[in-house]
Every structure is written in C-alpha cells, then in structure tokens.
Length: 229
Image (tube, rainbow, N blue to C red; front, side, top):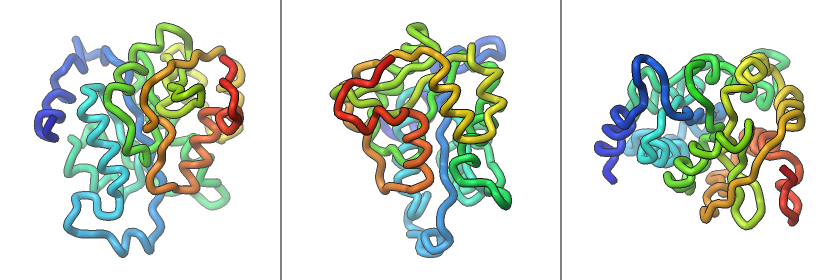
C-alpha cells in the first residue's frame, strides 16, 4: 500500500462516528533526539536520522487505525510531512530533575488525555519500525479480552501494549515510571500470540525508549518463560 493510500485509509476508515473515536488510538511515543544526531540529519529524508520513526509512522498509517504522535518539537515538526497536524502532539522537553523515563510516562498521560474519547490506546515506542500493520489491527481487537493486553512472539512480550479506556482515570494521573509499574501490576492482563518478531525489535536502540519498553512489558519479558497474565 502506498503512503498516499495508507493516509487516505487512516483518515477515512471509520476513525470517527458522530464525533466519537470508534477504534483504539495508537499512541506513538518519541524520545528526545541527541543534538549531535539532529545536526547530522540527512536532509534527503523527510525525517532525516529519524528513519525509525518514519518507518513506524508508515506502519501505523497502513493499519488504518487512529493515531497520535507524542513527540518533542524537532520530531513533531518533521512528522508533519506525513501526518495531519491534529495527529501530532508536541510536548516540552524534560524539566530539570525529571528523568527521561518519567517524562515519557507523563507523555503517555498527555496523549491519553488528548484522545480521551478513544475506546482504548495502543502504547507504541517510536523506534519499532519492523512491526507489522496486521499486529496493530490484532491488538486493537484484543481489548475486549482484558484491560491490558500484550502481543507475544514465541511467548515473549513486546509492543504495542493495549490498554482499555476503563483505565483512563489512572492513565491520565501517571507522572512517573513507578506509576506505570504499579498500573501494570494492579490490573489483569492477557497475552496475545502474534506471528510478528517486529513486536520485539527496536531499531536503532534508544536508551530512553528501552527503559520505557521494559516498564511497559514488565521484567518477565527478559526471561525465557511465558509471562504471567
């Protein structure tokens, strides 16, 4: 599917009915780019060194699901070459004393609030360019099975993590990675087996998003056994 056709599907394939969002929203969470990376950007590419984000956005567009990119100014501005402005939420950089992971968790809360009418949210770090669009669609239908759902490839959890709208009030109050960890531990979850190694592949690895991924999926992702629901 071409980007043009994917964008048309994204804008018209049942995203809104009577002002309501009828499908879960994919929240794409970007980390701040190091200044040296921005300075070395390839101007021949719409997003330069942000090629992982570029690929991730295209995968989400081709899924036909509602989406919202939550990103600092440089990435948000670059993404406007692919997305309409209403699908991009620009956030301020971390304030003094705030860790990057706490900042990213706070960005989840902001994204959820920004799409408060959604029946749920798929939390997707922006550096997951190998994820299949069909996996996003599968996870969008998984929320009827539990308040939290994880895609699993060969019994190992990955992303996006699907969260039901019944957790809205707790999601919007999150301000730290501890809040996210407590939320994941408090509610039951289901594992959804998918034939997609892309749920576990990040490229290129980013330390801030790696920490967020670990908090989203829980420590058992690092083990060899099946995570407990």
